[in-house]
Amino acid sequence: MNVTIIGGGYVGLVTGTCLAHLNHIVTIIDIDKTKVDAINNAKSSIYEEGLDVLLKEHIGKNLKASLEYSSIQTSDIVFITVGTPPNPDGSSNLSYIRFAAENIAKEYMIGHTQHPIVVIKSTVPPGTTENIVRKTIHGSIPDVNVGYCMNPEFLREGRAIFDFFEPDRIIIGSSDQVVIDKIKELYEDLDAQILVTGSTAAEMIKYTANAFLATKISFSNEIGNLCKKLNVDVYEVMKGVGLDHRISPFFLNAGAGFGGSCFPKDVSSLASMITQHDLDPVLLKAVLSINSNQPEKMILLLKNRLVSLNGKRIAVLGLAFKDNTDDIRESRSIPVIEMLLSASAVPVCYDPKATKNMMQVFPDLIYCNSAKDALKDADGCLVMTEWQEFAELDAEFSLMKNRIIIDGRHILTIPDAEGVCW
Ligand code: UGA
Image (tube, rainbow, N blue to C red; front, top):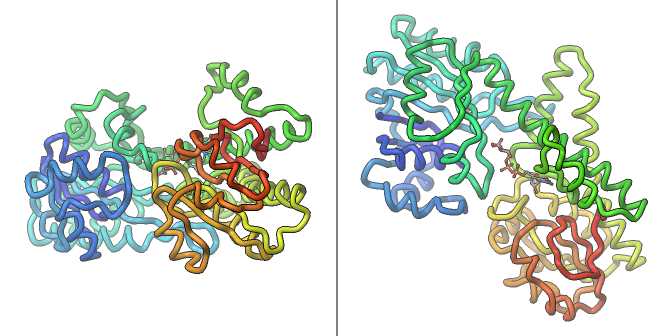
């Protein structure tokens, strides 16, 4: 099929490249020339395992990026994968969605296929597909029979290519049979359970899934904070709990808390929707509050051991919000570094991929090229990201001035690290 993707960010780039790998002919549109040029040179603007290889395989063949919207006219399917950043009150800013819908309408006015289909993949509040996308396009071109679908993405950063090809499920949010059949055909090479729902239900599924996963993490952190007081290893507890098939062993890892561009934003956005409907988001407020308190727990453990942080050299291992990514958005290392700085400590940072991005937030910190360099002469160490290479650290810790090591991710294998919840 001919597919256009509007938005060459994380979701659009991964989706477009993977659809090209399923033999579709894909154009990714973005307003940023640097991004478009990079994609056309088979260079990804983000670090995502396996993405560069697929880009190289398909760019210039059945995949290209463009600043122009004209490919929409000949596309069977147009995906909207633009960002929906949070407003100051936690609600979603939908201006990029509106802009994309307006541009689709303009191109359909010039020319269009038989039954053009617009698919929303961005995470959008319930009702957006109907009330914003459909209304914007239909308002401009009432005589064109456009089909609409909400098809949420469930890709995890760092594992997005795997998740695309091995999805747990594909949600097709549409009541239009032509659309449903076409989307099924688009993904026919994937072995996935398909669930057809209304578009608003599909929008809710995405928020609910992310909020539930975030709730599991905060729940584990609350139990973990008690376990710490009781001198019990929360990982042992959650292993026993997760063996119950009704609970499952996943997303029960206690520690520094969740970060990233999705969980904090989506939970806040859902809480804000609940408030707008005169309800009190009691549970979601607690999820966010537990999450924002976890980084401070790491600082308190450090303070207990060092008494004062003033002038102390603290190795911060891990800057990305999780492993296998260079993304630092809402990374738990950001509040930790802020707290270290306000206590007049000296953070000495290392991350395998995210240093460049963190330099934009904190240009004046000391950044090292290896964990070993960061640990040399350190008075303490905080492990903020679950990078596998940290599991292999051992002799490097003997380079520290004071061997005080706080693990926020249960990743270290040395016997004397203190866990935030264990
Ligand atoms: C999340 C969802 O997992 C994806 O399904 C969804 O598509 C995506 O958001 C999105 O909405 O686009 P992502 O943010 O990439 O994916 O990362 P996760 O692997 O979910 O991790 C999020 C955060 O939770 C990380 O900071 C991670 O360290 C933390 N985490 C995860 C825990 O603290 N404990 C856990 O048990 C699991």
